[in-house]
Amino acid sequence: MSLKHGKRMALLAVAFVGVLGSTGCKQEGLSEGLPTVCPSRVIYVEQVSELMERRCGTLDCHGTDFAPMRLLGRDGLRHAGEGNRTGDAPSTDAEKSANYFSACAVEPEKIAKVLQDAGGNAVNTLLLVRKARGQEGHKGGKVFDPWDDSDRCIVGWLRGDAEANISKACQAALAKLP
Amino acid sequence: MLNLMQSSSLRIGFCVAAAAAALAGCRYDPVQAEKIRALPPEDAQGTRPEHRAGQPCVDCHSTYEGAEPKLAIAGTIFSQTAKGYLNGVNGVFVTIHDSAGATYKACTNTTGNFYITTADLQGIDDFAFPLTVSVAGVKMNSLIGRERSCAGCHKLASVDRIDRDPGVDPATGQARDSAGAIVIDPTYLSALERCGPTSIVAPSGAGGAGGAGGMSATTTATGTGGAAPVAAGAGGNAAGSGTAGGNL
Image 1 (spheres, helix red, strand yellow):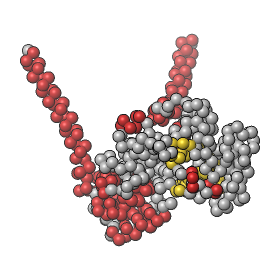
Image 2 (cartoon, one colour):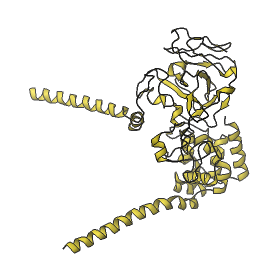
Image 3 (cartoon, helix red, strand yellow):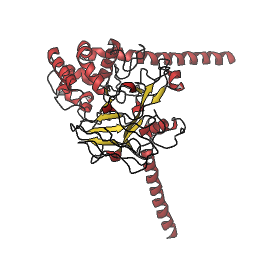
Image 4 (tube, helix red, strand yellow):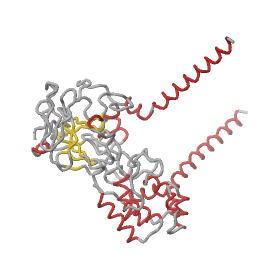
């Protein structure tokens, strides 16, 4: 009886460890699975990330460990594994990539549909766009006007516009930031 | 009949109690409550405007906690000694620009604290966020998205923080999630960036007049560092100082 009980306990322990392990793996794999349904990572890292860092990723908004869409960067929250402090070294590639995963993870399925709807209206339904435009509940309120430079920078990336156009919009938006 | 009356009174009583509970529940914010609970005990300054330098002022001076005066924005400006210790900087202007084009100036008091009360926002309900800030001629790198307490992001070092993150600078508190204390070098302040004096023993009612082109200064009850909106581009500096007021 006690042997059976011992075996059962051992099985339960193994199952518990297994569940814990699989949960951990799921979280690890979540961000890695996303790029297949998200627009260009290179364009995001090179053109879009800086605007989102400066306009959305301040320490009191999305630059915090407590924000569901977390953004990292020089003047905001820094990457946990790199040892940088706020305000010091420029934003790193790891931080910009992490921002890419954050933006893609908001609505991965919907973003995939936007990619299949080049030039269409699907982009206007994304939370990422609607919150920034103030069309959806957003603690930071309205951040961009529809189709202003900042909006075109992000929307252009989401729907796969030509990189030159995205770059022009992003640079114009950055130039307007105080 | 009596039973019916009792029953309806009970029902009304229940509804009133439920409504009161719901209202109280709506007001209670566990995140904000925890932030306030985690603050250290009151310091030697008591509840004067010089108290709790470096702490997040608007956590308490808000509609939520109810401490008076209600503050629209507040913080502390420090200098750093050669050994790394922080001292509050007295009598320096902090300039705040909001997104609607309004400019506000506040003057630090003896512990380096500055603040703009909600009453100082004459004629408007609130700042238009995001804000930009400059102190001693140095502009803050990032925008302020919505935080009204500078110390919400400019966190000082603490045992708790260093325990959680060994990367915290023990002198300024700068870390991966904090810009650290706002530190300036007062040695090189120009006359335009200085304000005050801001003695707390000043007679009340002797608030300073605004400088040329500026609007009237708003003085605080104790006559210490106050704030005033400044007409954009007019070049006026209105310091709410108890003794000398706008002295530029």
